Length: 378
Image (cartoon, rainbow, N blue to C red):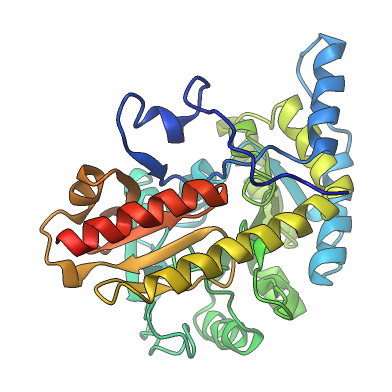
């Protein structure tokens, strides 16, 4: 079956956060992490059938989400899990704050790299916990966990990992994860690994290794976060899972989730089940399209030496160093030139932009044309 990722789907007149931001402005939305592609036909059909039923009361998936998650990680990552380990979530961002409130006293800290996806750092602030930041050598592609990991104290208790990395797009190698595992063992850390971009590996021959899959010990100190949201463009439907092998930890977090977070809604569960049961062919086709977009973007930026690009190994987000342009507010400057990138400042680098290339090739070409004009006019 063929899928049309070249289709330009009108989103200005929907509830799209991505497109509403620049409505009535000549600015291309290239920021928040959703794509402009229609979902897989199997997902749309499943949602239409569920909507046709017409009743949307409180939902209970009766273990279907846990069983499908177990099948998916087995097929995709060669990781065997017990479905009992799977805890449904209505979202990942609020879970970061809940996790820190549950696992850390007010005197304890979490740890994460920087630059990083902003909810990692914002969750520490919102939960009233301190956080230690480890500089992440984002433009050194040899080994992104090789920078010296600092000595820790008893206050440091939770490591927040993003694999593949957002915004860098790096898929961490097994050796790198084993280094982190040794570090976690030495300091007795919990490790929460956000792996929501894992299904979008673009490098042929590259495979994703979940942190928890390294060993039984890693399983017992881990929380793995997964969702079909990024790979299948379902971010608006509010459904994710946490895989928590440690029984005591899982019990604690289940109780906290039940008190503080809603359950995934019935449409989110329906879409996720359809994605992970029937969406593999569509996903493979999307990977091919995104790989071609990524390579097209990377080739174009070789003609713009003022910009330094990290070519992502996974996902549809590219990180650009724009410091050579010498702009005090590069995000506003690019908006003036019709380009709505994600500002790098909340990630930890105000002289960087995140470029969402999860769009049709024609829209990408328009963005690259504007980018060239902007840089040449700088």
